[in-house]
Length: 500
Image (cartoon, rainbow, N blue to C red; front, side, top):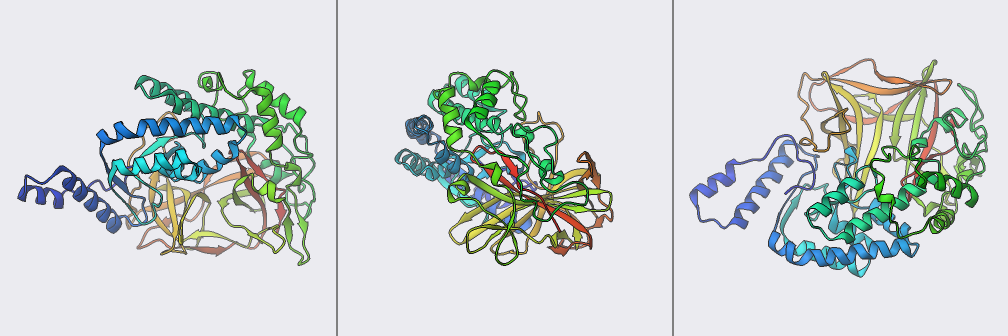
C-alpha cells in the first residue's frame, strides 16, 4: 500500500510479470518486493521529485500486535492533554510526515508521529509497526515514511466526527477516537480564543485595521493604501488577549457558536462533547499558553534593520514562520504568497526581509505558497505550490527544493478540485509536456482592503524544455511585507506590515 498519493504514471508491470511467468512458484513477499522496486525505480526515472511510497505489510501480524500498543499510545495522548501538556502533542503532530499535504486531509505517518512523541508508549508502537511492515521503499525526499498512515487532525477538524464514527463502525478500540477528539477540542478552543481560524488573514496587518472584526480592537499597523510608516511600532492586534476575554470567546464557542472556525458547524462538532478537560481548565491552559499578539510589531536594531522581538517562551509556541509579500501595482496589491524565508540577528530577533526578490518560473514572477519542510539528519526537502492553469485545467504546480536541487525544480502539476466534498484523492502529479501553456494565478486586493478576485497573470508561459525555478528581482515599485506565524493551535497571526 502507498501512504502518499501516487504519481499519475501508474504502476510498472513489465519486470515483475516477466519474472513471475518464468517462476510461477515465486513467494508472495518476493513478488511484492519486485512490484515495489519497479514502482519506485520507474517513478524516480520518469517523475523525479514526486513523492513515492510503497510497502508490504503483514496484516496478520499487524492485527495481533499493533492494537494494544496503539491503545496505550492513545491513552498517553489523552492523559497528556489532561495533564496540561497539549503543547508536546501539538509539536509532535506538526513535525510529523504528512501525506497529500496540499489537500489538508491530515493523513500522517503513524510510526513517525509515535517517535516524535518521545515517550515509552510511542517508541513501542513505532517499533511494533515497523516489525509488521515487511518491506518499505520511498523516493529520496520521502523521509520518515515507515509504511502505515493514519488520520490525526491538525490542518482541519471538519472530519473528526466522521473519522470517529468510522472507527466505531469497524470495531476499533475507543481510545484512539477519544485521543483525537481531545486533541481536536483543545486545538479549536485555542483558535476560538484567538478569534477563530476564519480571522486568520493578512488583511489586518496589510491595511492597518482589523477589517472583519477582531475581538481585541487594535491600532493602525501601517496606514492604508500606499502610505504608512516603515516601523509603525504597533501590533495589528492591539493589546492582545487576557483570561477574561479568552473565557468569553471560548464560552460563546462551546455554547454552540461555531462560526469562527472554518469548516465547523453543528453538524460536525460532536467531538466537542464529552471532553475530559473542563471549560475552566481549558481557559486556564490557553491563558498560560498563548501568543502575545501585542508584540507583533517592528523596531530597529543597532544595524538599522527592522526586527521583531519575542521571548524564548513565545517562540516556543510558534510552529511555523513564513514571509507574506504583496506587490503594489499602482491600483492595489498582488498577493505573491508565503515563503519560509526568515533570519535572526545575534540577539535572536527576527530580521525583516528587504522584499527585493521573489520566486519565479522561467524568469516570470509567480505566487508561491510554502507547503512543507522535512528534515532527516543532513537531508532536507521543501515543497511548495504555485497556483496556475495548465492549458485550461486548474492546477497547483508543485515546486521541490532538496539537497540535490537547492535552487528548486517543478515536479509536476496537481489538479485542483473545487468541490470540497471530494474526499478520495486522485493520483498525484501530472507531467508537464512541451507545448503546454501555463497561466499563473494571483489573489488581488484593492487599497481599501477588499479581496477582488483571483486573476490570471499576464504573459503565459509556453513550455519548451525544462522549467527553471529561480529568485527574480521584483519590478521597481512598492512592496508591503508581513510574516505569518502559526501557533500550537494551528492559528495564524500576521505581524505589523512593512513598506519597501
